[in-house]
Image 1 (cartoon, helix red, strand yellow):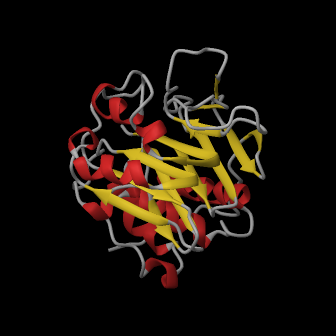
Image 2 (cartoon, rainbow, N blue to C red):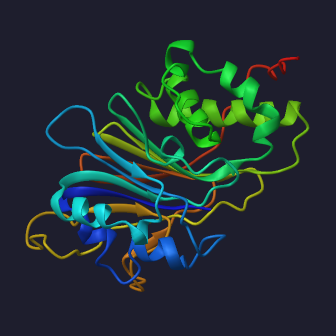
Image 3 (cartoon, one colour):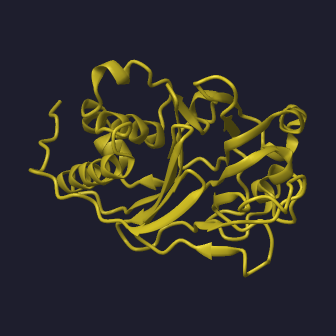
Length: 277
């Protein structure tokens, strides 16, 4: 599957975490240590917050380790909050519109995992998305569909509450379709002020996820707290820096503070009826 990271803290050039560390995200794109697949070469993406309300976005289908444009862009962009993702497709096409992060308004979203049996519930899941939002859906992935379902269920007003509702809705659709494959989710969403990350799966076998406050080059170590990072794999072997996010937990970041909470999907009011051909 995929590898990703979130950085939140003092403004820093993106290459500081994408290229420089021992186990940088670019190294993970070729030699992931904790992922289901070692190679994540089906495209990449970065999203960052700057001077304008909406985040910037740069995505492409080349492997991250083989794109000179990514290195050049990462050397120049400086941001206090950014997402980065390297993709290993779970079946959908390798195209720019299917690369993470996804963007809508101020929101960025990225995902590692899969909705089991997505091909069987895709139509019904997409019918749950607000039609005004669905018009913005450009790709074919389960990840992007989940993002627009989160927006439909109130991501802007209550990120964690919207995630509980959306995950419950997906599980109900899977159950109604008799899907036996698991729903696995390590995902992050941010509006530039609040960031929420979730580690959850229906079979208690979520992809890896960690958080920490690393000391990074280029930062004034004498001022304030170190930055916050949430990521699929630690950037180095320093066991004191990185803490694994437990199964079925959420990480919330706001105003330089980090909190970890248990995550349980809501109970849907009723099982959704599957659309019939």
